[in-house]
Length: 453
Ligand code: SF4
Image (cartoon, rainbow, N blue to C red):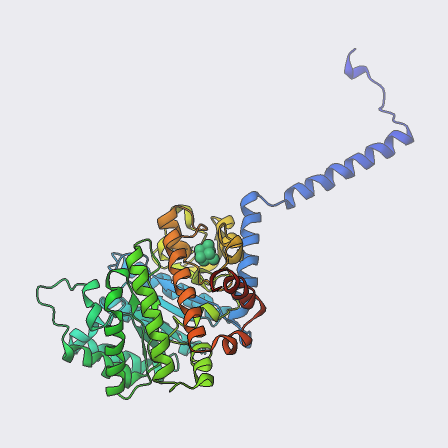
């Protein structure tokens, strides 16, 4: 039939209603479709909301923040793109100030004071925070190699003074090994100049500024640690500093063998006895406070301590930004492609938001509870164990959420030695009475299984 010969198009009233309804439905669906977010947009919204609720709100005035912002330049100690780093840092600071965010800054530029970029970046943070009315502080872990040069030391001290004057104070912690364990980090020069005079500079520096010492206990030198600890104590005394001014951590790696674990247990035993007899003068109350409240050199108190996070791993405490690319990663050990979680979005030299890259990793590692990790969930020690960092676990087991078997042995050795020493000095009940129900639960099972005579 020829369409030109068709009559007027007559539709019934009923059909007209159906037609109107379906047209309205199509328009509605089209609008919905246009308003629909793409997969990426939904991920971006999710990641921004996650950051807001886990970190950003806690960075505002009056919020009970226990989280910070880590800025660094990645794994290497030398940066080949200093201009980019400074430009990105400047954008990041503008973004923080605009949003009224005031996080503590954990600053990690390799060895921060070996390159001019470290000084320039710190000065930039201090000046920008001061101008933007941000009251915060900057934490830096350093091995103090700057003390080898008078000029460098003066530069660091001037910066420390400046940071205090501007009310954005820098706090250093000295990650150096001590006289009897120095060979763990041999110097790259022919002659090792780390003699007593050299160490006196360290102690004088920390005394001037009130900073603490943070040596690491490595398996290779564990048999030297009693001597090393007593050396630290002699030096602290000579410089009129409190004996507690030393924060001990054990290297949590796969290198510990059976004989080193035995030496480690021996050292814990020695440390407990020394603490009880010397600073506490065999006073039980002092000892309970020294171990539980004053920190017990960290190593004695950490099995009994609690924190507000779900995991001891610091990845849950900090957003780690690699400034060269403005990417967000879990930590410096996972600062590469599969683990890049998000990226700051930049337009016209300004940060305008955050784009998601690996939301599963971001949400997974920030939300997981370490007592629920495979193996840990059914482990006797789960409430007393400090666990390991996700980066080390990834490097050793290939899975960030799987514990390193040697670190488990190390934890068992430590807790076992601590309990034995507490029993020996008749302190077990005093300590036990001050612990959380979870800690008590682990201790009850261990006591039942291991300490039966
Ligand atoms: S000892 Fe190992 S398995 Fe047990 S809680 Fe610690 S890390 Fe987990």
